[in-house]
Image (cartoon, rainbow over all chains, first blue to last red):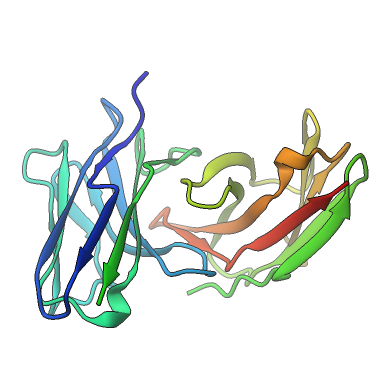
Length: 114
Length: 110
């Protein structure tokens, strides 16, 4: 079974530039999560999708972050414009459904904003 | 939201046993998870507790006390490859979202 795929693995951009991350969850997984993990901290949930609908985006900084999952499969997270404090690893995870006990994580995208 | 508290760092000797503690707020509880994360890699699932008691899985065991808002991860027969961060995460009722602690960095030394 293929795991959660994310790209790119690494990205370096200057502040005020824009960047996009892509995630393809495990086939058949209805629930998709985007997490932000700053160095030395645990992952922090940014947004949760159930199929192509948003379940919770209360911790997403909507003035600069956006995410979509148009067909209920893969998803894109965008930052525009980026700030220095956005430097982090962006992790995508999926579960079979909202009550799924095991979340599978992708390798993440390490973003450095300079 | 839930406040998850776990030690920042721990060191233990190869072959020994180590216990990593985690406390959380009990309101809206719907399960306690432990994940392992090696440096530069994705978190991987270790265990899930929703009822009180001990769940054993090979060298790893996880314990939960819902009334005390307390869990621990027990690692036996430590190996060098167990050096990693261990993340405690609480799942909230209704939302099913995971809220992670900051993680405990475990260093296993010879």
